[in-house]
Length: 89
Image 1 (tube, helix red, strand yellow):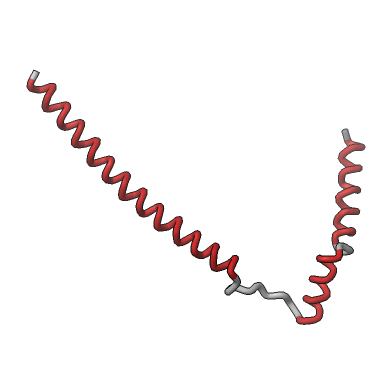
Image 2 (cartoon, rainbow, N blue to C red):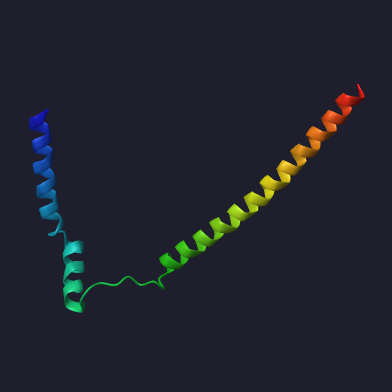
């Protein structure tokens, strides 16, 4: 068990060292070094889509809250109707 854990840790260390040699990561590293620290583009379509998704979730939450209130009122009304009918018996 201990040997397998040690082996896994050694493999992870080697993978971490090899990641820096990956062509995409290496080219990104060079770009960062060339242009200074990389700053994400907050106007990119992915960021805009994420913001829109968050806003849509907020709208859906508000809609669900309204539906819950409506259902609560409907249930209270049904309970009152059932109680009044039971009182008539």
